[in-house]
Picture (cartoon, rainbow, N blue to C red):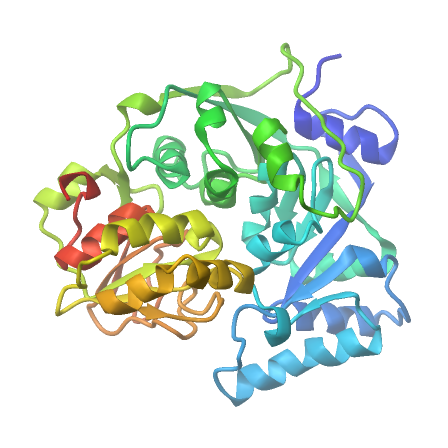
Length: 421
């Protein structure tokens, strides 16, 4: 019988044909932890009496939320993961010596790839579906179970097919596509389902846009987002020494989907998600007419802190200045991206424009540090969430947008359309 790409990945791992709705126990290729969630997993692991990891080379810890430590509490929290990594001589432990936001760092290093089953104690683990993998977030105790057994339980998700058609107009990116999907579905419209992205538009999207697209599948409630491997995926992987052999799977033409959504990208304007939900999407023309002054603009995160995002922002910011009453914070997703941005002269452009260019960190996105909002402040961010209090004070407001909109808005001091520059 016909299967979706997600059903095929699970079938290959369990050694038999599986269907949506089945409960299965499946081997895990890569477990991802970070400095916030892993200490809980470590405590559960040790309380179980386990002495060693089931698959040490299939477990990574990325210190990315509060690194370098912002205070004593975060330093002590980080030490739990450090001590565990040293005790178990963990091969894939990343801290200040090799920094990066986990969902950008692991693809960069070839630690996740096509056909993998990946879990992480972070909801945006679904990012890695851009590589043709099944990737999803789980709780910290679920992570501990996989650390001990090398497996975990799944309910095979049903799928929603999202068909993008047409060539994106200038200043339309993966971020706009996923914000439009979330606007259509709502924050729970894809609850525990696969969002399978396809259509001729995908061929116009580079990997940075694809990662952005899959990253926010969770904001529609999805279990995972996924894009089948094509020539662009293979080009991205061509210089990676993959930890496992790539296995390509493709949905059958007669596979079953609970819903099919068609979006003509050629007619899409940049999308702005208004407070306080990612589903509260509006066309940028409305945001411009609403004359929304900004205290802060943030470009970064696991959604839009990649090299292409920095190039987009630099092209707009070159020779310009950030508005007097607006702060611009730019955070690269990995050290490699940071070094390439310096090599290309992007960092000089940002600093001359009046921006702050930071080390890789999740800090500002979750309201941890490096960009916390004060009372009634308004921020335009390239992050993935704009919930109440997400980036700081509960009276602050967060608007979500792509990197071009963010750069143009930093110059204008209010939400602005990059097409007008």
